[in-house]
Length: 174
Image (cartoon, rainbow, N blue to C red; front, side):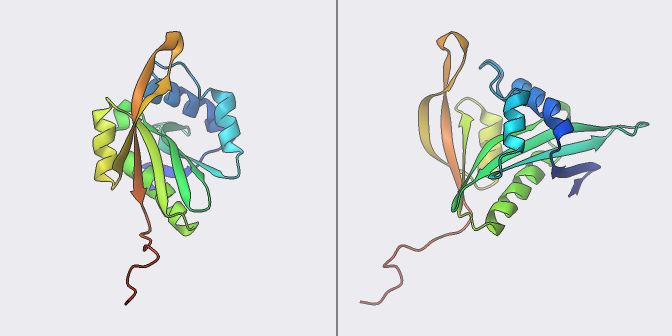
């Protein structure tokens, strides 16, 4: 998938350092660094997890720069968007929406009915983004994020229903 000269594709081993640094700088700031390269490597090799990257070709170079990524874990009927980030200089170009669309289409294909995620309570831009993509706030989780020195932050748990399911007795004539 291409978005304005950005390629969305499955992550490779050489992407691990870039993913880890983006996670540290754009998701985990102020909380410590949980998704270090070793943790990202574990996600990359987990058969129930998809790790995507958004790459932009560098002008006058054969190199490609990772400018965003998404990590989604899949269960039988539910999926969890663990991480999604785009570097600040590449935001508002449709990259996050393309990453989210890719993992949600994969989830639908796999039979997943609902996607969950957590986002910091105070992260208004992320809340707006997810709500515009169809996610709904379902629960405020106190002290969800924990950082050094006992620091903690609340998170909104959100979900996006991909497939509506009927209640057992709906539509039955009695």
